[in-house]
Length: 254
Image (cartoon, rainbow, N blue to C red; front, side):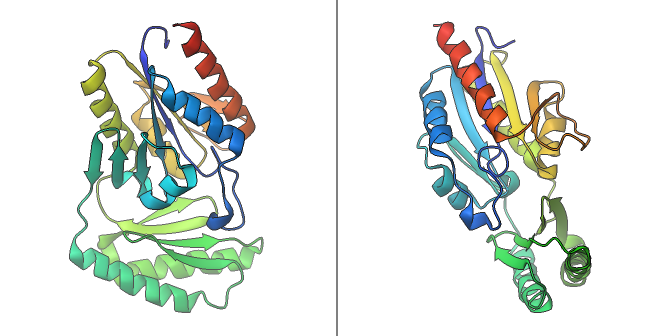
């Protein structure tokens, strides 16, 4: 399917390239994965993008590969390889987010495993607990406060051990991958690009759905969870092997 075609390789970060850790700060890109990504990025047959729920500066620091495309906050910010996009967030919505963050921090302060993260244009609640009652409390508090503070101005996104409040914009990872694909095709000629997307989280389902008829999609882990992806990989190690095979195939085409 990729023979003679340019490959747009788009990868989620946490749970796809890096193992999930107790806190987001502890997550890191393994050295051999980074070395492989650097080889992929240097191959003229590939355009590499990392698309994350993390703030764009954070995922850029965690990945640290120059010259590739980075998309942060589920694609609300995209930069790199001549592509730049920043979705406009109304000032009123940003004020709502700040107020929501303050109330949320107070409300979950006594719940073990709860941690609030300010991502500038979104607010995330890390739910790192194995206690079902604590998780229920976090979920209820988060949804109640998001409704009270923002109403329709805020959109709640569920993920692995987290909840996130974002501005209610008609934009997600699916829109982001299609935007990147359009820009890369514009540079490479409209019908010569094969899009590949790999991700592990609920938020990646938007990208899987967007590429349903125009790309190769891979769900990382979560064997018992339904997915819109065409293929599955058991975890980050199998994903790394898949990326190695892709690199080998492109090298053999030279």
